[in-house]
Image (cartoon, rainbow, N blue to C red; front, top):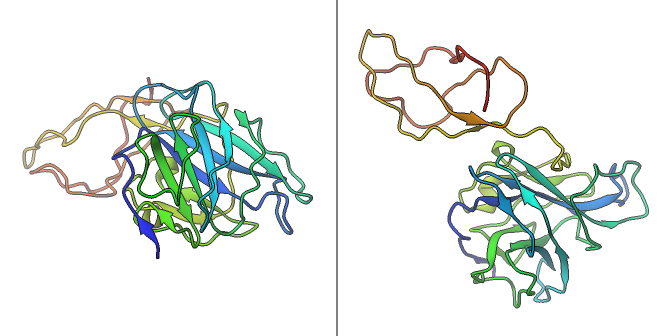
Length: 246
């Protein structure tokens, strides 16, 4: 029976990508990896934290990699794991290195704010668990597991790592592995609170967004969910009058 429990609500640092096919037949990358992402608005020091792994139906969490350093808002953090005998491409420079040999198809990965090993299936989640991903036929996950993966597919969190509804099945999709580290461009974070101010019918409407991270200029914005403020009807993507991000 699958256990499915919600993790800490809206974790700031989340597991954004899981890949266990490194070095296997048909794989491009030589190593397995786990990628983290800071989806919050403040830097997080992960020194003393760990990522831990168990098989899809296992109760042993002896596979652990210690973390160190600070993850800035909008920043990724790459944890390199075990290498296989195949693959042609090294990962980008990892921010932490371990030797966990992960299953390519199904397993469980936990982000823990200590190095104390978990016990049991992983469910119910210990207070130290910051985020949890069950993939494939995992017997513990946030609500339900991600799709089954393969030697050539990773579990990638939607929204470039930002989406977190505490449902692994809904939050992740299988796709080509795309490892990112702390040197990768920062993901743009809009920190303006919602809801936006109301608008008046027939009157110009202007809102200033506060953002951090991102690179380049000329961003455009469009509404992808929810409803606009009363009196406002979006007709085309909005282009900011100033493209600077801070």
